[in-house]
Image (cartoon, rainbow, N blue to C red; front, side, top):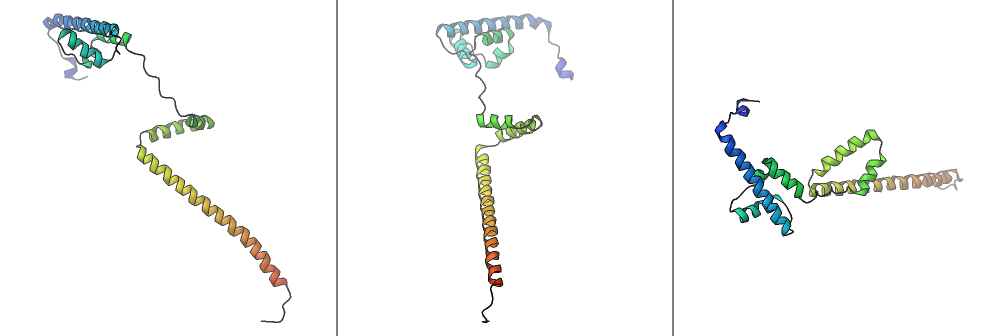
Length: 168
């Protein structure tokens, strides 16, 4: 902590600050009550707007966050937090199919890929598909050549073993 963190505030302002905090908390409670009465969603923005309508004063969301009483009022009345988006079942199957030692690596790769842009991921996927297609084609060609080479050698060896007719 530096010198600036240990600022000394004048004691005579403390009473005024405490009163302002209480007044802010009271305004937030009134705004929340009015929002509940209207069955409106309780958000930072809606509270700020309602305080402005009711009291003619503007407050910021940070004012609510920094004021302990106002923040507790907000937390007690806000809508439930949205559940985390469920992970894709294919991804979960992939992660569950690997050993515990590999899971950490897989989670790291997943987190890294989530930070990439969608266009970048699409380009990588198409590139991988092309590479896979080329490798599959090359493998099929090798197998075809091996099969034809085996049959070709057999035909060639049969020709050699056949008696020559005397023609050159």
